[in-house]
Image 1 (tube, rainbow, N blue to C red):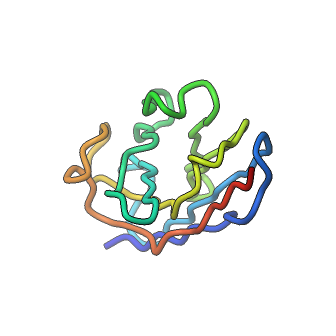
Image 2: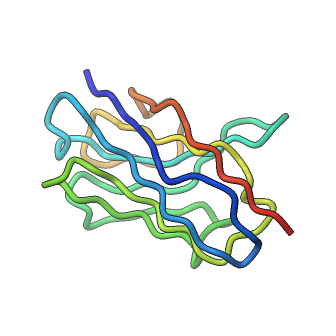
Length: 124
């Protein structure tokens, strides 16, 4: 069992930056691939980024490529999402997720554990 707790959301102007953090509690963090998803009002949850167990491989949705960076610190049991050049379309609840394998992708069904989400609002 893994518990995930996100933090770092908030209100930011377009063009600004935020860094989300996700702290993991429970079983060995380094054995999980991690992902970030987001869900805007009235829309389905969508993939944002994923990182493998060691942090050496990352994967991004086209909508955020070049603006967002996913990283992890296995010593701190934490995964991060650095978000730069934010746009109003990035407004959503952002969820951290963990997959019980070393590599994961964009498929929602690959992930076994989810955090409670953190709100990100980008004003124009």
